[in-house]
Length: 304
Image 1 (cartoon, rainbow, N blue to C red):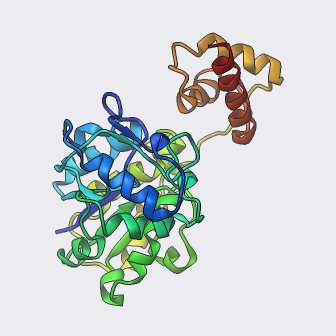
Image 2: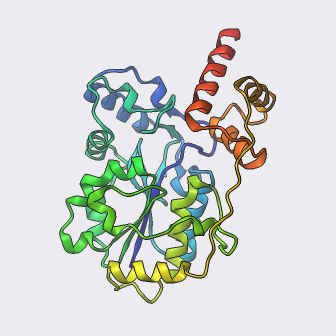
């Protein structure tokens, strides 16, 4: 039977019981040991499928429910976990932000180094290699590029005939060594003919759901070239979305808009960026937006 592997999400149900932000910086052994102790402590547990929230996880969960395939989740704080595992509510990521676990590592290891360390010590983690070897069907992996980079070495350690069963879904180009396994989804997934439209942040999960429910059935034993052709055929009649330029605003104008919506958005940068781009139609480059949010947070903290 095929299996699905998707990413954890920053947005979770309820408040985090442990956070990478609370771990003192230091070498990986020191930081990691404190993190393992924190997630291992007695505390409330929640099914992983319910813990993660947001559009990306909703698409992944729906793909698993509609296909009936086992669902595993790549977590930067827990390792590889099953969607039906009971886990603590935590805040840890390998993406920039206050819960970036990599920022705590004084010896500057990359995400793949942290992943290997975590996988070997987390009480919640299971082996990625073992999970893939345990199934004789395709392994469908939908991850943002930083998380795909994190597990790349694990995937490349698989026997060639097993690696050939992996199918990748990513909103960006996959690493060169894995690029031949990436299914050829493009922005037609967001076009007027597609019933799978959404935001760029959940592109990989939406592509996975389309493949798992519309392309793969009856083709489970096909080779990667055949699956690639099947995706291309499925998208052949779809048109691309019409792109419109967003409204331009000065930094002062953007700050005023963000301040007006700060409380309603809970001060969450992802929600406010989506508000600007998707609801208000305002153009704002990601780096510029991040700098504005950072400055506004610092000002609010100083006032508090």
